[in-house]
Length: 198
Image (cartoon, rainbow, N blue to C red; front, side):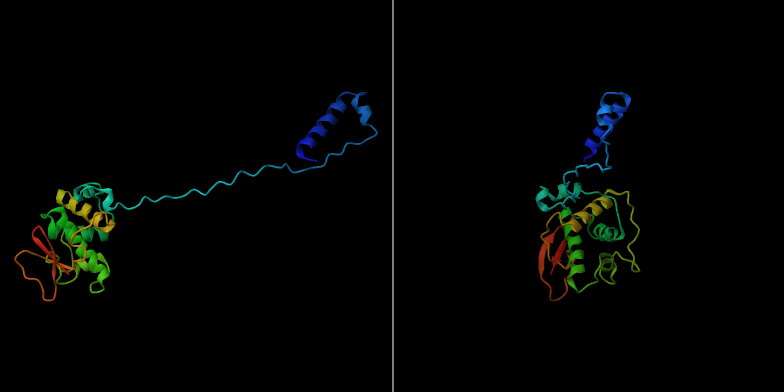
């Protein structure tokens, strides 16, 4: 007996008790048995698990120009690693075109992956004898209200997210015009006032 037929039988019994001499007489010899049942509830259709979508990192194809890629970035600093990379961009190339700033960032990222330098960005930037702006293993204080700082942070984000390609893609070294490169390296790009080498 289903839940609904059980309810119907109970309702009929109550009606028969309320109307003596009619239905009650017909059922007097025959006891009504109501069996307890558990109502059957249809299971809901399978609902697919909610998918968590992570937007893809911007790629070169998402922007028409490097300036557009830089402008699309958040210029707030969210961690020490980004601060170190932006600091190197700021001190080494803030007066350079965006492509030169990005190339400086790429050199640092290439060093991290090279196996010849420290394995994290801050250690590469503060490595003794590598960057002239570093003093006592520390990056000097920066006025973060300056537009050139905000640009350096945005360029650092573009570099880390690989949102734009640079012609200095494999460079491990750079120097300013008028300085001699070390022995055994070859120049792969010239951007603004910097030469980039591998």
